[in-house]
Amino acid sequence: MYQRIIESLAREIEAGKYLAGQRFPSEAALVRQFSTSRITVGRALAELVRRGLVERVAGSGTYVRSRPEARSTLGLLIPRLGETEIFEPICRGIAAAAGNAGAALLWGDAGDGGPAAALRLCDEFAGRGVQGVFFAPLEEIPDAEAANTEIADRLDRARIPLVLLDRDYVRYPHRSRHDLVGIDNRRAGHLATEHLLDRGARRIAFIGRARGASTVDARLAGYREALAAAGRDSDLVLRPEAIDAAMVAAQRRLRADAFVCANDHTAGEVMQVLLAAGLRVPQDVRIVGIDDVEYAGLLPVPLTTVRQPTRDIGDAAMAAMTERIARPQAPAREILLDCRVVTRASCGAPRRSR
Image 1 (cartoon, one colour):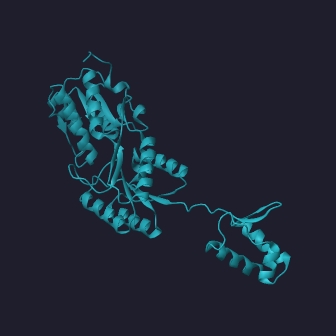
Image 2 (spheres, helix red, strand yellow):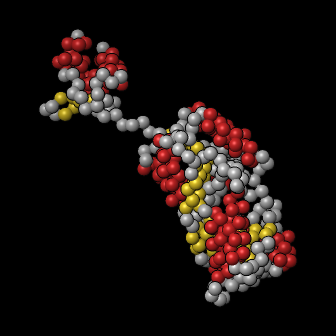
Image 3 (tube, one colour):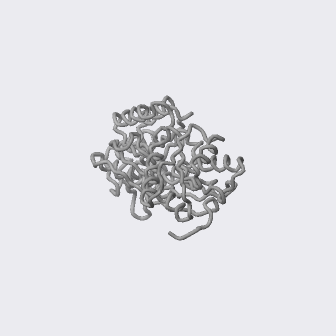
């Protein structure tokens, strides 16, 4: 009997018959309503209290509790998340911001970072009914743009808001229809190059892997702008498939005395190859990276780099998602955060003032 009373009263509360803060029928009234004993009614009310549906106030009576708003559930679609240096701290920032906002975060496993695994995860998020997805587009694979477009289209069809992290999935000057949060990569390339100019570097080369992300193109544009403003040669650009001994020959051919590297991972590889060839960093060649990953200061020569504010990117991405959920028809935005140079040993001391 008391189970039937519990389910009947719970349904009435769920249906809105009794509103939050409203006084609930007394035990005597419920005894009459269900034609049962006071002990059975008391047992049923105790269970409703345990479920958080009502609360008893001493000397006043029983009241319907305010129901907390349902927590939103958000998904992370980050290919090769465990293998990336920059996205893990960004995702930690998103997780902290989501927790503060009372949202749950699903850390999806996109497997090997290929299109098939990412699409499966995309469909899983749609099946779970998540309220939004943070997406770092695939890169460095054939047909990456087509795969990224299909992922975005599937989420659009499921009416799931999408916030892009770090980069767009279409090449500049084109723009997708989704919000994007990251740093100003063009400025990052400019800052790295300007820093080397301040250190007295005369022939600064840019190096980034072939088929890199669109962020590499933006950093290359910043490099060229900084050199053009200084009246220097801006065509010392290397886009190899791999960073190996051939790069040393290219450095000698270009007579480069400094490198702006597309990211810290590339900078670490460049440093290892140069040191293995007997060149000294920074005495013979200066190096600056971009990102400031966790191991940047632990390389054989601690790396000067342009830092991404990963925690702030996470906060901004969560704020963008919250606004997008509330205003799904609002125009798409690019939220680009500032970045700064972190000076370490790999660029050496200034040789002159500019």
